[in-house]
Amino acid sequence: MLYGIGCDLCALDHMEKSLRSPHAAAFVRRVFGEEERQALSLDQRLPDGRSGIHQLASAAADFAAKEAFLKAAGTGLREPFALCEIQALRRENGAPFYHFTGGTARWVEQQGLCAHLSLSHDGGAAMAFCVLERES
Image (cartoon, rainbow, N blue to C red; front, side, top):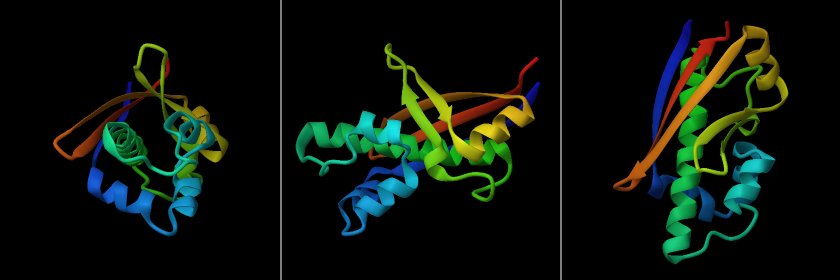
C-alpha cells in the first residue's frame, strides 16, 4: 500500500557553493552519511573539470533524495530524522537505493516501509523521486 511520494530538485550551482564554501567540511558531515561521503569522495576537495561536474551532480542528486524522502514521509526535517541518516547509494549496476541509519532507520522499520528511489540530473539541476510503501 502506498504510504507517500516525494520529489525534489537541487540546483548544481547551489550545491557547488556549499561544497566550495569555507564551511564545506561541516556541511558535508551534517548532510552526507559516511557511505555517501566515501562513494562521492566528498572528504576531498571538489575537483574542477568533468570529474568535478559528475561528482557535483551526484552530490546534488543525493541531497534531492533526502528532501524527496522527507516529503514522502510527510514530516519535513524533524526528529527522528537527520539528513546524514538518509543516504542515497548506488548498486553495482548504478541503480540508486536508500540506506537508512540511526533514528531514520528505526522509524522506517517501525512504520513497516519500503523506500524506492529514482535520480536524474541534466541542465544544471538534479532531481530525486521517492516512493514509500508499506511492506506486506
